[in-house]
Length: 596
Image 1 (cartoon, rainbow, N blue to C red):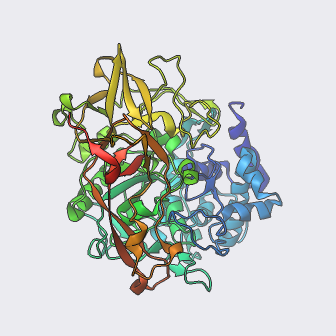
Image 2: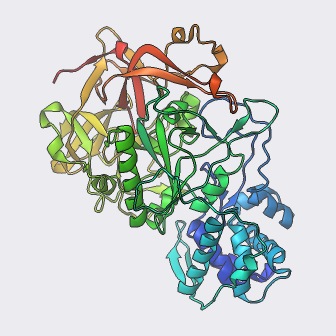
C-alpha cells in the first residue's frame, strides 16, 4: 500500500462532504489512532472510523453458551449500516475498503452536523455537536469527553506511522469548540456514587442493558443476575481484555442489545473507570460460560495490535489498583493462574477454541502489571529443583518479530516468545490443530496464539540443548531460545501427568459437573453445562496445575427470574493447567501428582 493513501482519503472525503479535514482526521485518530481494524472484537468496529455493525442474529454475545437471538434492534449503534445507506453502497464495502470507510465516517459527521447545527458549518468550531453525536453515547460525560479529546487532538496535531506502513499527519490548528452546538442533543448524567471502586480512582457507574429482547424469556441480555459469592459461585479470576476500540464505543455497545457486557471499562488517556455491572452479577464477556461464572471482566481501551499506543501508564495503574481492591474483597489470588488475559481463555468446544479472542495480546506488559500489583513475577519464589519454568523475558528488550494482516510489524517490546518444533530458528513454529485443521505450520502472526508463551505462564521443562529449552506444551514438545535462562525464572506449583495405563487423557475448557449431578435439579438436558474435550495429553507429558477445584455450573437461562437460577455442584474435581497458551482443565481422576 502506498504510504500516503490514507492521507489522501481524508483529504478527498473532507472535500466531498464539506467536513473540515482536521475534524475528520481527529475523530478517526481518537477512534483508531488511524489503524485499520476488522471488527474482530465484541464491539465490532471496522476501519479507521470504527464503524460499528451488530447483528442480533449472529452469536456475537460473550455468554459462551447456545442461546436464542431473534433479530435484536441495534439501530442505535449500527453506524456502519447507516453510513452505507447514506452512501448507497453495500455495508461490506465499508468493512473492507479503507477509503470508503473514511467516506462513511465523513458522511455521518455531515449528517450529524445538519442535525445539530441546521446546516453544514464552515467553521471547524461549529462541528462540536456533530462530534458529540459521533461518539454514539447517550451519557453527557462520555460523549463530551470524546468531543473534547477530538478538539484537543486538533489543537496539538498528530503524526504517526500506521500498522500498515502509512505516514499520516494532522497539522496543529488553533480551534476553540463551540460547545453550544451540542445543546440540542439529549444526554444523560452518569452516577459517580455507589460504584464498586477503591478510593482514589475516578469511577462512574453506567449500567449495562438488562432487557428481554423478544417474547421468549430466554432471549435477553446483556448479563445474568447472581449473588456471588453468597450463592455458592466463588469469584476466582480477573480477566484482562482490550476493547479493540474506544472506551466510549464499549459503553455504547454494552448499553445496547449486544449480548455482551463487562464489569469495568478503563480509559486509556486518563485511567478513568466506568463500571457497568456489579461484581455480584455475571456479565457476558469471556465467550466461555465457566469463566464468566467465576470472573470479573476488565475492558481496556485500545487495540491489541497497537498496544503500545494505547496501554498507557495511567490505565495500567488504575487497572492494578482496581485488581488489588477486588482481589482482597473476593479472595482472588494475585498470580498468573487467576489474573489472566482474554487470550488465555479456552473455548467450550473444538469449534469455539479457534474463534476465541487473542487480546490483550503481545504488547500487554504482564511484568509491569504484576509489579504494580505488588506481586512481581520473581525468581525468589521459584524452585529450581521442581523442573518448572515460568516464562519471563525482559519486556523492554524482548522484541520478537510478528506479522499482522500480511504486514511485518516493527519489532517492539512484547510479553510473548515463539515456540518451535525443534531447537533451531530454522525449524517451523509449532501449530495448534484447531487453528490449522489441515496440519499446517504455525506462523508468526500476532493472533496465532498456538505457538506463543506469555510472561507468567508456567510449564514443565523436559529438555535442554545448548541455548534451547524444551517444555511440554499443547500435547507436544515445544522449543524456545533461552540462553543462560534469559527468558525464564524457576517456577513452582503442582505437577500432574496422565495416570499409568492411560495412553492419553482429555483436556476440557471448563470444570463442569458430571451429568448425574443434575438429577433432581429440574434442569433440562439442553440447559446443562457441556464442555467437549479440546485436546489429549499423551502419557508421559507433565503440566503445572493449581490445587483441585470442585466442578460446578450456574444455571441462568431466563430473563429476570432469579428463582430459576441455581448453582449445581458436582463430585468430579479438576486441575487447572496452562496446557498451551490457554488454560485447560483435566479431571483429577485421570491424573496423578508427580513427585519431583
